Image 1: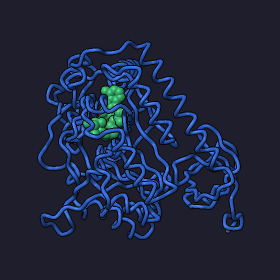
Image 2: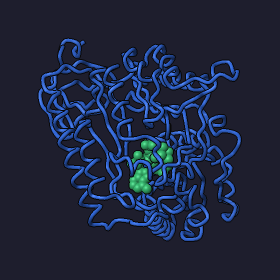
Image 3: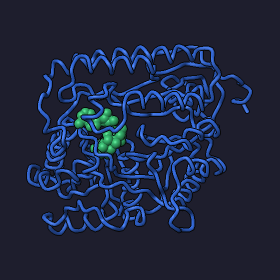
Length: 453
Ligand code: SAH
Ligand code: SF4
Ligand code: F3S
């Protein structure tokens, strides 16, 4: 009998990938996906634990689902199983079960291949349906193949977990130790995705450029990400390759050279720096200086002069002085990011930084965040403005807001709107950019005959 599955996804792209894989795993059990929790037999909240706000969301969501379920059952409707997955499940599984009794099952990010069994257990007796192991056998060995690609672009997780232990971060605890999938498994999945119509593949990992997967055919040799990217570029049909998220320390020569050599490797890199102050970087245990970061950027620009950069910043780390914050503003101005994310520091239970004194007031953090965001908005605008008049290859994969329009992605991850017939979805077309907006570009097809064909 057909059942309905609703997955709500929070957090990073790894969670987006995991949600897709959970849907693939449950499809053979008769679960069709739906966006509407109200009609779902099973709702999975795929949670994020990175900042306090993200983690608290699970409790308000569960409250809403509990009410929805009660209303539906009062009207004689079907029951609903409520599952919590993802990083908050890993960090607070037992507490979630206690604080939110409406939750039927909890599954951590490394154990979701056991979901079918957990669902059965939850239906028998809910006390047993908690699985936050880091199993020795990888979930990847137990998951079915991805069976759909939406809009010509797909994610592919190649690395998981993190051994870097930045002092503010929960990821090493929620995702566990760093592991890489074998090259053969990655290439097989990439070929499969290409066969399903993926033209752009984004390799995912919490620390993706620390990739060191077992070489094809086994053996003790490991491949770096640079080497993997070369092999992926040979797969017919894969026109674009991206990877995220990288750590500055792991940008090795092979990977930087790949940016110069491989046209498939997109000239856009998300490379979090967090702070421009060496003292703060050290307190964060990032294990590089601001100048180390500048040098990596220099090498990247030398290999691929048109590369655009993105980053993550944390403001208001414990003890951050105004001068140290100024160093962050200086670095952001100097590099000129095409886009960047910035966050107020959020103390996370169990992390070394949460034990550090000198936490700053909300006002100071909010003020610094606003100032940094103004600098980032300026450089983003400058970057978008500089695109006007240029010719860019755009992968069109979504309908636009107006009829006759489609939206696609530039090599630099900008959204580009243009008049493109709907049947061109999934094509990479050259566009002349004629307008720039804060978060998108507008353009005209360079060769309209190509679209008519
Ligand atoms: N693995 C990636 C990103 C992990 S989380 C990396 O190393 O860069 C994504 C971003 O969230 C981080 O880059 C950081 O800027 C932010 N972040 C992580 N922990 C945080 C915390 N405790 N408070 C505020 N922001 C945080
Ligand atoms: Fe977190 Fe640092 Fe690992 Fe990134 S590198 S996931 S910020 S511990
Ligand atoms: Fe959040 Fe976990 Fe990703 S904490 S950012 S969902 S790795």
